[in-house]
Length: 580
Image (cartoon, rainbow, N blue to C red; front, side, top):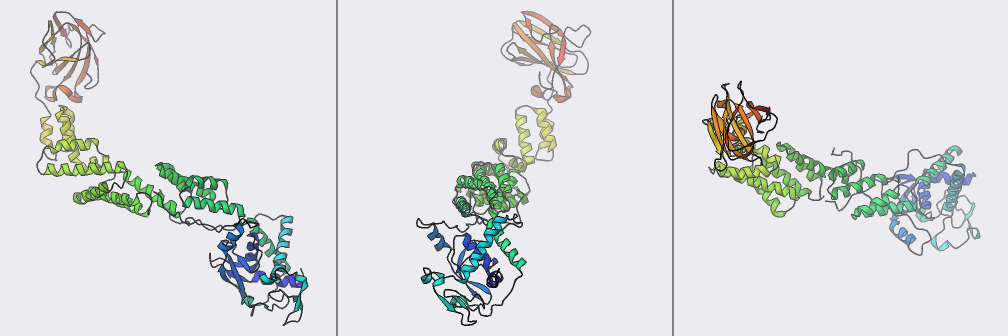
């Protein structure tokens, strides 16, 4: 490299400037190489190698100063039908990355900005041919920078006119902006007064050239840059399907793979596939907009837990507030606060907020349904506390169809209502068990005591229809247990029941036909009525009347069944409690 070229390279690699758009600092040669890559050959125009913005520049006191931002005008000119080479579009940005991401649910109008593309830390090795090409390109920039013409002088051949440097007296091209020998500035807009002279060793100069070439190799080409920017614009406009297609075609270009996950996550969210949405949005990385969706999903998860801890609902409200303008996030935050008031025993506040949500119809149907159930529950409780016992029926209906949250909030009251329902169905043993579990609530202990029924006298307890010509007498041995007998016809319909006290007998009056007999055996002081009989402490059997068959055909006449005695004529098989 001759002395003139070395001096020019010295100027190019030691003069720095800070981009007004992105704030990144680069050298003059980097700005000019990036401009050439963007198909801009005018050395009076610099292109930021980081963000791709184009500016007019001047050299002052060893640094670059920037003037008008020409990005939009130059790119519009180069992408018009008359332009020979399309220029790169400036990056459109999606959200910057955040450091804090929730562990863990419509859509924002502005998805934010994409982080700026960064040069790779370890550029791939450069081939000999690439190095030679880039050497020539840098040499061309040196030559062009020395003799960059004004607009009115572009058509004149460089060799036609020469001039003498007013400082060193050497012959130089008339169009030169500065003297390549003594650095005398020859244009007012390229003032170089006070610029220091630096000389680089040849090895360092070569290294600079290699690094500059590597930057060029890794700068996104114009075609991919345009596709990337278009995909970002589509995502910003809400066309996530098309954005996914374009990002997928870009492969590993910049952040394309991550934004495939981002767009797919939003599509899953819009479809209500919240688990898929959470998985995709997490895979997208630490993006501000992804964080909003993840906060929404986290709020939903906390609501689904139906916790009675008010802090959980307050935390859910905070998550929905972090979601910003996404979907019904604001309404869901208000709904979470209403649930918090409900579980914190603030019924008036809960009813007020839930009524507002219902009237505005601002949340999904399942949440509106729960809001109505809570209001119905609170209304029935208020009536019950004022002495309206009919409210128990309304509370039973609410609890039967309500969510787990209301049942858990009802607590002992819910158990009491459930026990009363079993009591009315004459399932006295089940009712007694529940009443005993809440013995200190209302009159639960009194109700539990009433569930033990007085045992009937020996004889018929229930008969379906009139008596018949079949007389069936059943004997019980004196073993300390009573018996309750159920007789079913061939259609398995209960036709008659008998209670037989210990050591006694009872006679059934049946029409002629086929019947099966089942019985419960237990202590008389553990009698819970004809539905649950002796409870789980009893013994339950099905009789085998002919030795192996349950059903036996009775004709008109008298029959006797004896069991648990030495001359008994009946076998039996054991069955489960209540299954007789």
